[in-house]
Length: 461
Ligand SMILES: [Zn+2]
Ligand SMILES: [Zn+2]
Image (cartoon, rainbow, N blue to C red):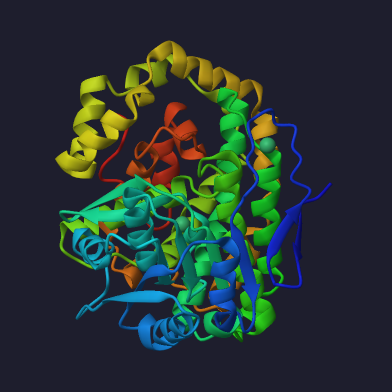
């Protein structure tokens, strides 16, 4: 049975059709997720219903405090709760770093029972990590449909100027009031759409991992994300006008992506090489002391950048591969280490190698993967045939005014070039790009790539 969304009379979201025979362990989400209009007035009652207590710290920033934080504080106080606001004031952009986390932590008192985040990515992630470290539950009031992190269990953060990820908890209550989400500026809507478009690549790569490496793929999670992103493509007009229907479809897609993380306990269905490329851009921008591009917008663009590689592979003939030549040209462990240090710089490269110890393949394993891909080429190509037409994705992105050139996000040619090679190395998670590399094809594919000069080949020529 297909996965279906339902709402009760409280606008609380429930899902049916989650039965799955993938053999993996599944957990049903236990969070209270609300999507609807006029929800803010009901937040005190929703908190009471969940029994979170009466002592809260409310985290907001310069934008979200006047938008909803101040009003919500008044409503909660009127309902008898004690609320300590923590308004993160910044001259520029708020980043979820040690300073932000410290401010939230120091606003908390011994009697604080729970936290409330009022915002999107940075505020939710800051609150999420403080909540997990202090063992407190938190409530998330979404203010923009800009990323899929509301239901996430991982917080991307900045520590001493370096991007890190920390395991954290999902909010106990998530409130997505469409009246508020609709006021988000269009670039934040485009960002949310970009984050969702990347799910096509994530699901394709997961299936490729299943075919080449026998990785367990969860069909229900695949169905959830593909269904959500297909629906989004059917509502581009509604999204352009930020109609209630359009914003509802978008926030549902973003929440459902997160639900797959809760169901299987990892982010395989929502992030693959398109996210790795964006992490690369983020890291390099941070090193330069420059602003990171908006997350979802960057993911949308990187999705457009990697998509042609899939189309190219759909016409590939792997029987022509010369295994002896691939073996001769493969990087030694030292060469691979040197490449990573050069591409990612020392701090990040060391962390990547430490976290992904199995990523340097010995030849027998590389050969096994190549032979498996040769034997199962038709299945691999069928995965790509299941993707929607690229022209449709491109048209939707253009209609919405999403950036098509990396330069629009401050990504220069050299950074783009490296990211297309280095994205595969960010983590062990299997992807088409990893397969192309193992088959000795990646450099050729990127050589043919219209946007790139290949100056940092990841295999020897
Ligand atoms: Zn994302
Ligand atoms: Zn499953």
